[in-house]
Image (cartoon, rainbow, N blue to C red):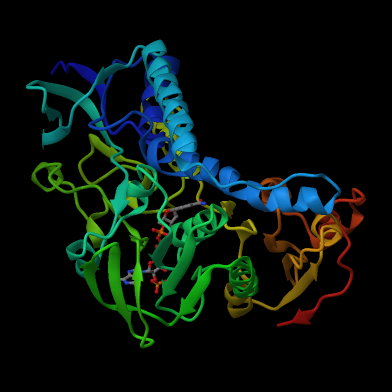
Length: 452
Ligand code: NDP
């Protein structure tokens, strides 16, 4: 049987674009790709990239205060969201164009429309076409999940934040994960009065306990009105905002309410079940170690598979798929020791096991330090940095590293290389410190603070 394409990719985000470019550009496959919204996907259009630019924008208020403490005669004005938003839109247009240019350069045919599966090899396009492909890659990502109470009240999601016409004076953020905490810090930095409700005992569930506590404390010190063990009971639209009643007996009006209560895979209405693909909890596509579904011609990568929902992981999965299927280089994406950063203020970088997970598994030693870094201490700020290594008591290997500090995302990338290589605590100790930098503490922690 002859097909229109060797590969048809549904979804123009990080995973889909990488797979398409490698399959076509490196291995000469005939590739088509459909994207119904904007090229670049969540990361570029409404995730990592605009979020990080907002992190930068929001950090200048503190930077101006620090500058004054260092002797500069400067005063902080107000943040102009409209001016920032215009620049942000221009930057996202530029990045989207770069993604398109990359695909065009690799000779991938772009279809600017929605695509759904008809069967294992046939894709129907909303522009009226229908194409066949030897392989189909599902790379449709995820979308924010809104509980019914929030959907009924018209609450915002992270998608809406980037499109706001103006900054609200006050906001309630519901959730305690990556997105809720990052936006709480960003909006607080931009001068919005931020209240955050999290239903559990401590924000950032799943991360190292000490780091979670450290971040929560600093968020509160910076002005985020964080309420733990708190849920919304009732929301009513009123003049100027939304009146919210919560389980802690509070009742208040917020100009905006943002729900960051998790994300779900984008598999609805794609025709996957009809094509024979198995879906799991929450609608995720079930794949094996090679990203292949139970239908041999259909693969899936990225957030739609709900493995580790991070851009660099989706890129790895897309690349490994292309190497395996079109490059005759069987490659399994490696999901071990994936480092990540949470762009709260202060920033959090983490790789490997938490203290809680490691001590359940084996005897460990914990090396940790918390200190006031030179730059902010001079400026009179109370900020403290936290660094922590989890070490296997038997092999001496560093099992996990957790850093809460300015630039922690940059530091953890480098620590992750050593840890992936199997570095022991003694390897860290043998490495000469760089002075005076915060990260030197990683190689100067002599005695464990506890053994477990
Ligand atoms: P998370 O799953 O991390 O967090 C969801 C939060 O919402 C949790 O605190 C959860 O509570 C809470 N929640 C869930 N349902 C409800 C409900 N019905 N009512 C009240 N609270 C609720 O999702 P995010 O949306 O924050 O992030 C999604 C993913 O995106 C992340 O897992 C991450 O992979 C990725 N991401 C990565 C970033 C980065 O690398 N810097 C940045 C942003 C996102 P509970 O803990 O009790 O379940």
